[in-house]
Length: 583
Image 1: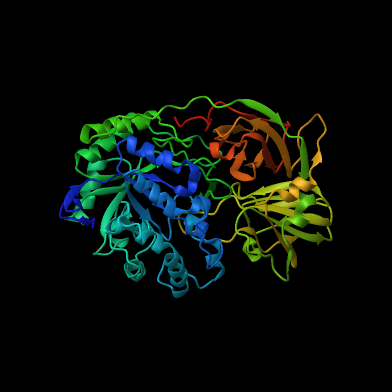
Image 2: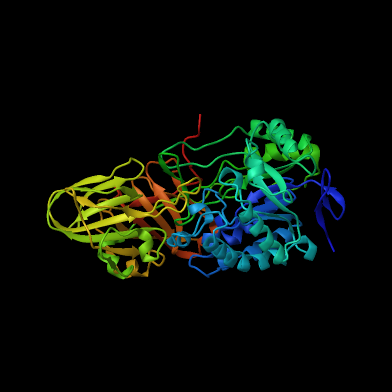
């Protein structure tokens, strides 16, 4: 039987010192047909371990559910890690941050007002136990002690930055051990103040999260943990992007020098991220430290392996550093070739407001304004409706996160959470329809778990407006739109909100890079798969289309445009464009 343990100074693999050289790959951000390729390229850079978070909300979209189909097949992902001859680290949270929607916590969890977040409150722990009860058997049977790749298992995630409920942490430890987790348990926190101590327990191995000043951070970690191997569990070698900013990058040579300092000090490391992947669909998170900032679709992270799976200058700089300390494979992955370029035009379209009757059942809520959670749909779009007798100023407590207003079908304006807008002028009475977009739930800080939608009271000329109808708009299937779409005229753009369709042929699977110049904001779909959000404000100008989504012959492109386009054309570019770099 293989073993993995924590010694006085080293990790011990079968009793021998072992240095963890890990890279983060989130299986849920990568098309499953590309998992093996990304894992292989990690080994070619010189890594020996793959680390991943586990997103609770993705596996459990409703209470009691636990999905492991398609891109959520964690067992298959771990088996591919093992097949590559590598080890694995699993970090299941239950909170993961990760710039992921709600930090991985299910939105339905907060429909119970008694469910305290990340605490030993009973309702929360009961939900956590259900999640771990389904997850842990997948991990336990793949531990190194049972012939699998898993060598470490994390308890919570940077908990010291949030709280210090030791009973909560102990509960997570007890659940894991009762389920059969026998590999070492660890915590990770930033090496500042009291976070390391607040976020851990004496029996748990403490690791740090940082991206610079390695010697100083490791010294802090050693001061708070006199024995055991030193490890940076998140070596931040890049950063994520928000809409309306630049594309964050870090200097490859400087990042490599920090990695060299870590390895020279004898520390183990997990590179966050080795390969970032993509926030497909509506999965991106957001930050709010006074200003709401949703994360973009690309999670490239300026990582060594790019969003589309190709080595960067940083990849080769890191590989050279690792080669100074350890043996690396002789094989070198190829750089990106140019992808197929072409331009296509949308040929049919249907206004969104004409299709809403088939997208979800309306819910009439007596009294005060309902939040989106009332419908049981926790991502995407909701439509609020009500007859208003008169025009005037309509005011809300808050918009979460973007609301488009229509009066008898005609657009009258937009309110944005980012801009702090709360009031709009209605020129007259009529049927008021408000299309509300959830742009991503906050993934870090005190606003985790907040409700989405229009936050009341809703006041028209100072008088509260009650008795709203709210309807979830399910765009998971495009069949409704396909049936209702009408042929477009030859010229002009496309009005929004609408779903439009274009078709193109391909010789077979292969990466594409969708460019939507002249379009404003929305989501794009390839053969029914939601690629994620686009927005003309940038920084990213292309959406990554994983090669396995493209099929031989005719392919369908669908575009959910919220505002309107100046063109009917879209293009596929030769490569990615994530926007102007940080200077």
